[in-house]
Length: 174
Image (tube, rainbow, N blue to C red):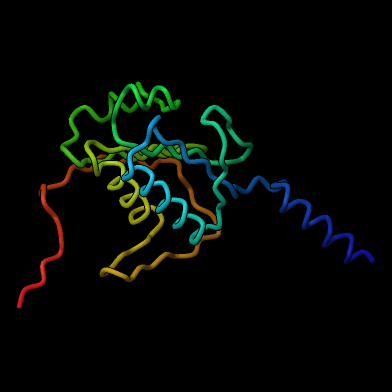
């Protein structure tokens, strides 16, 4: 009987997040998100679910779910970011000198900023975060590696990345 009570209490603690473990994430996109921004958010959600088991919480951008990490994902556009509740001043100062398709990644205890300049900037920020923080790899088209983690630390993440080359891609020659 004691074992059953202990198991029930343990299940309640896990399901109500009583141990303080993060198990949810909320992705905030700019107002009127582009197709690339939506794709970047979906990739982030898919890979984080596979890696650490976090589920995505939906709702308005003003709602801050308890114990959820907030991810701000988007291309740098002051007006669209401000309307969605992004930390605009921080982003504007930090991204002044980014090149086209450059990315800015900044983590804190309960929030992560993944933004970039230009059409593909947000997608580059998400993939940089997934590769360099989570450890995901895409060695070739159609193959991926997503490591499993019990937990991750988001504090201290701070990167600005500007691409060296404007054009990138795979070229298969005879």
